[in-house]
Length: 205
Image 1 (cartoon, rainbow, N blue to C red):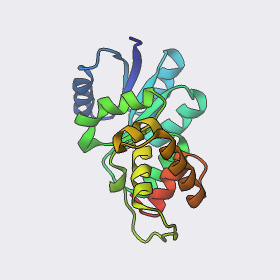
Image 2: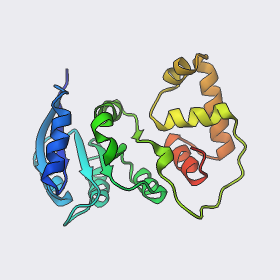
Image 3: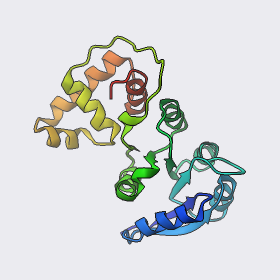
């Protein structure tokens, strides 16, 4: 099994210990570095091979989002999961723009961090309970989507493939692919990331 060299960043030692405790159950995950701010993560990535960075958002010196943006520019192969206390739609829009691979609410880190790492290392996305990231005073565009189409959007946001969605819904993979094409056409989006952002903007999830 390939090892996943992982760097953790949080300015609270107790949080780092909690993350490490969760990751002890996963033999393939090797913690090769710990940091208390984003700049330390960037410095570490220049010296060591890193496959995954798990970043807190609010850190001194350099915050998690700025760190993620610079990591994706300098080391696009590094997968990034951010941890946050705040469920705000504008925040989700920003991490999607940056290209962050996964996002977890800190309250769900214990049960969801392992599955999130598995997904992002497979090249998928993982946005934790995306329907809880909300914003007030958003103008909703008029797009008529069926209940099935909305359900498929939710599964796509969770990082599932067309085959996996088909298995969950007990329908043919081809049918899912057709639904996906129709959803992209209706929403005017071109890929899953754009579709997720559209769904957030219009409170479809």
